[in-house]
Length: 53
Image 1: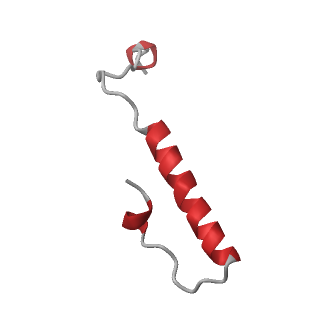
Image 2: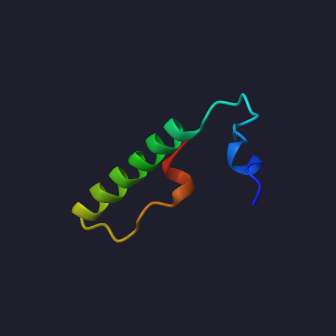
């Protein structure tokens, strides 16, 4: 087995910013809305598109 594959560094080729922080904030906001509605015993949970943005 050749050694070139294990010695080849694999790096990203993009310069785009990550969406990770935005996604974390959106999911946190969604979980909070669902938690509050469940505590208030509301039947209708929010539609995913209406929570964020």
